[in-house]
Image: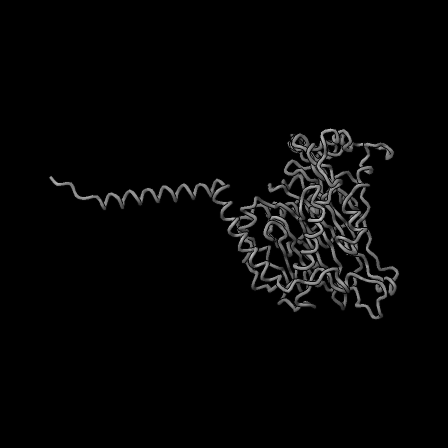
Length: 460
């Protein structure tokens, strides 16, 4: 089974579907149509719209749906249909599936947790777990989208965010009737299951389970330094260089990657694996870089010629224009949990095959570059271990226990999100300010009427 995973920090802006689809199509050239396309999206919209959710998010999500439609059109393939969309605050997971495979989805579970201020969803994680029919058996897949703490010096905070995700992101079964039109206006966001939802294997499971394939993607925010850059550090930032011995080659900076070190130390994303990185840092590009990207996107020429011109312009990489106040870093990552040894010992051919792991060109709407991972997994379930497991396996022994108060904590955080979202909507958006002005005018008018009614009549 071939899956495409995409992670992108949208920068609280509407994406440009034509550009996004073009870059995706070019990155997938030569590969067959994947069974699943899963988007991990961070900062999907301004905080007011993201925290209030519902119809406020529809314009932003519709841009991603249209991107998927255009991707199919550009590749001349059948378009994927929306399977499910879930968000926790500003972090969204959108899963799409080939329509001919829809009937193979047997059940779904979802979960989410905020790890931002007061556990709200300005940072957080959202996950979808599903059961997929593979011949006479059902295999499990778990997809988690995440956004961890920013800033170079917040390494321990990022590790704490990971711990909170493991402890508080708890999957619960999806009830098809309960979600119908309840969260998003577009009917495509209903789980498109052919019948009633079966009960999943574990009613209160975390992200680690013994028999599930696991994928973890997002703006994980691990940096290449633990302190802010000094004014002189900018001269050391990577630039395009074919010679890997050059001090300007990005591989020199990759040696200081926090995530690689923390993975090796087993301080985060326990047991997970990452494909080899052979692309430059995905963050933070300067405003000038985004202006260049915008100019490339506005090239006026016939569609086919425009696509070729845009591709060549975006991939020339004559210079990488970085923001001076942040170390260039590989913030945007996609990890996966490899095949357990008890499965590979039974079937040496059972393995996860990486086809492509790369960053797409910079788009004008964000200072991050999107990252994609195209891989294949065995079309068979992970069997439960039959023998005693001698070495620790995180599937069987998760690094942290589930917090028994996870539900209450999420409920409290959600109440805060609504309050903050409403305040931001009224204070930071034009439509919210219009409502406040209308209310103020109405209040003043009402007060004037009341005062006039209370004044004594004039004696003639």
